[in-house]
Image (cartoon, rainbow, N blue to C red; front, side, top):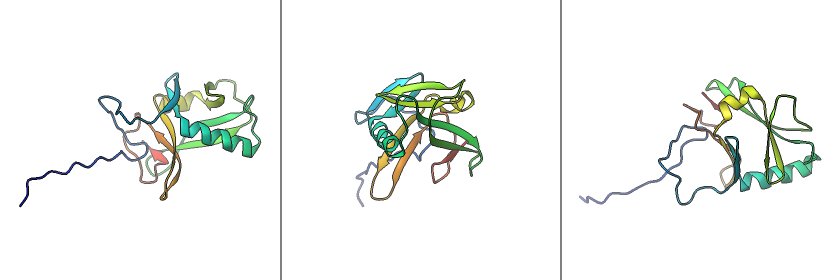
Length: 143
């Protein structure tokens, strides 16, 4: 019998709570942090391409991030394009890509990182949210 130990690294489920002591050396590069919200370079590139495909003007429109009641864990993430911000929205700019967040959703999204993943198994946006205490398997709902 061998006493060799194997170390396995894993990332938490999407939206699951993860409080790293410090950022790992291979941290996901972000375009920036604006008022507690971060968007990775991969996400910005994908948002920019999708906005162009959908005909959303980067000068006036942007990506709307939100939180809605529902889902198997209590709350669900909402992501869609909007032609302009609403009156009380927080507006963030990440390398020319605007992100709109309403005040209610901001309470849940503050400190969150939006990433984009494209692998053989899955492609889509990941909400890496330290405010989430529990997440479902699909990663689109949390509590």
